[in-house]
Length: 273
Image (tube, rainbow, N blue to C red; front, side, top):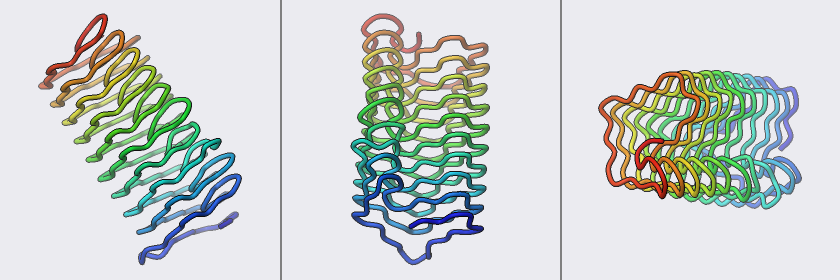
């Protein structure tokens, strides 16, 4: 499907299915310069791209919403991202499922230059990238990112951030979310951030994540304010430093009413480094 310079692209509330499609870019959909893209109750399965975006590729849009939609078993052995959005303004992912997708790099869901991203009531299980950072979500430059009531299970990346990698954000707020059994062959077993002004981690469960290097659960590099509130960290492991969290160049850290149990690091700081 090719959509160029459209005011609105909407898929019917009755289930729309995209199965076994393939292309160089945008295995199922390629959309250029659309004001509003709304994807409702759709299923994207076993789509493939050879260069970029095995499922959806969108360049320049004002509003993107994916609601009650499933992305499963989409592949891109040489492609960047399953869903790629560039130069987007307002983005909503609600009640979506991402399962067993695999791409070469750039995360299963890749944002580059966004204003606001809101992800809620969603689940990501068994996703992976073959190279680079962010096994599920990779965000490169955004103002506000809100992640709420979502579950990440058994996702992996050979680079930083087994589930999430984020760079150059103003605010990153993670609330009532669960990260279980993510793995990174570098740093940040479930999440890695770089140059994020404010990070809030509130009422989260982060268990049994692994990083071969630093930050068994979290790697935070260059942040002005980090708030960790009422969260639980159990059984995370780092191959070097920071069994739970490894931090560098942080201005203010506030850690309140959180619990750390049975975490390990091969070298320094079983909980924090």
